[in-house]
Length: 229
Image 1 (tube, rainbow, N blue to C red):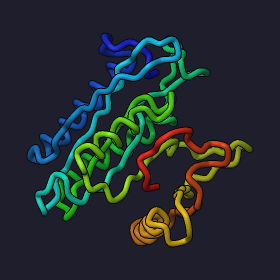
Image 2: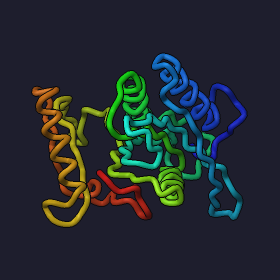
Image 3: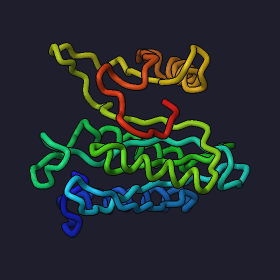
Image 4: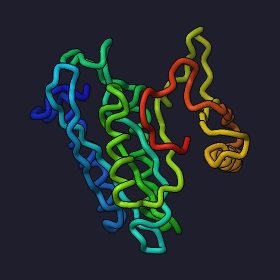
């Protein structure tokens, strides 16, 4: 939980973010340290008026153009979780699917893609404070705007590890890809189609199901988002 302890090395949000940073640094070392590992800290107010530090951890992979503010693609997951309530800081809540699964995807992408070179910059972003209102994503969006980062697209992986639906039906061959926007040719939806084509080429047995909504019914985020998918 975002409000959990930060001093322990084995439990709580502090241990999680330090582990994530160490994993990204290991991927960077294996790739000749081309992946630049960074953190972004912001303070957010709780309902009781107290403040909590929210820390994003990310890896920045420079593109061939060598412009740190140039064309950039971002892939994201959130490493905070919650039990029954967003402000429950003590209950054990590992969040295996929501969203350790998405965090694992981002870390694996960082490990694999860091060994390659791309035209554009890539950012592998792990955020906290998602369960309290997209706090970590908002902080990075503000940072990108202040730096005038040319962010072409943002793709987030949230709850991507489950293969069983609410009715008990199991299906491990379907991935839903949600994309918001206006009109059939909105940039977000064109990006979704590009992902669909890539998935068909790389993993023909997997079905990528395009859903032209920002999120599941009744689950639209309440607040600012990065955009993209």
